[in-house]
Image (tube, rainbow, N blue to C red; front, top):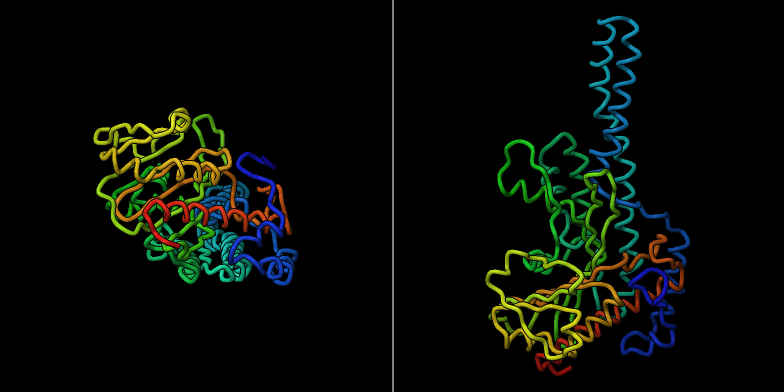
Length: 377
C-alpha cells in the first residue's frame, strides 16, 4: 500500500510500457502532459454549481444585505426600508458575480482535463470524456428556470460540450450504484423535477471509453456531494470508480455483489434475490452475492473475476450489479485520475504513472470478463 488507503506505489515506466499498446506513453507524458501540469491551477475542492450559486454567493449577499439594513436603520424606519430595497436589487447580481468566479474555474477545468488526458487515452485506443452524461440533473433543470438561469445555462452548455457515455451512465444509474443524495423538496414539483434536483448532487467526471478484448467498456469517477450530519459534522465528498462493461449477450437475471463491510446498494431487492454461495470459501468470508439465478450468478462472478476485482480495489470496498446487457462495478476509494491536487499524495511524473496504471488495471478486468464469456482476443 502507498499513501492513503486504496493507493499503490505507481509502477515504473518500464513496467507500464511493457503492456501491449502502452509503449510511447512516457514520451507523451514528458512532452505534453508534464508541461501542462506545471502550468495548472489547483482544482476547486468541491466544484459544485449548487454551492456556487446557492451557497457561498448567497451567504455573502445575505450577510451584506443584513449589514446594509443595520447601517441604514440609523436613519430611522424609512432609511431601514430604503436600505432593504436597495440591498434586494443588489443581491442577485452580487451572487452571480461571486458565482461566476467558481463557474469559470469549473469550465476551465473541463477544458484543461480534456487537453491533459485525451492524448494519453487516444494513444491506447480510448476516448477521454471530461463530463460523462453531460449537464444532467439540476444543472439542466436550472438552465431552463430559476433565478440564475443564465449562469446555469452557460455551465450546462460547457458540460454538454465535453459530454459522452450517456448509455453507460444510464446503465450505472439503473444498477443502483450511482447513489442519489437525499433531497428535501420544498413546494410542489413533478417527479421529473425532483429527480433532476437529486441527480445534480452526484457529479461524474474523468470518463474513459473504448473497446478492448472484444468488449466495449466505459469507466468514470463518481463524486458524491459532501454530507452534513445532524450534529453539524461535514463529511468530505466520497469517490468511487464506476466500470461499466457491455456484455456480449443479455443476462436473464439480476445479480448483486458487495463487500461485507458496506451496505447493499438496492436494499429493497432482498425480497426477490437470494443469497448465492461462492465457489471459494475465501471469498465467502469477505463478500456476499445475491441473485434470482444461482447458476448465472456463479457464471458471472467466477473466482478469476473476483480476484481481478480485488486487485483493482487495492483494499477498498466494492459493489457490483450484473443485469440485462451490463456488468457495473463500483470501487470505493480515493479520487482517481487526480493529477492537480494533493488528494493522491502524488504529483508530476508519479501522478501520471499512477493514472496510467489505473487504466491498465481496468483493462485487466475487461480481459478477464471477456474470457468468462468466451470472447477470443
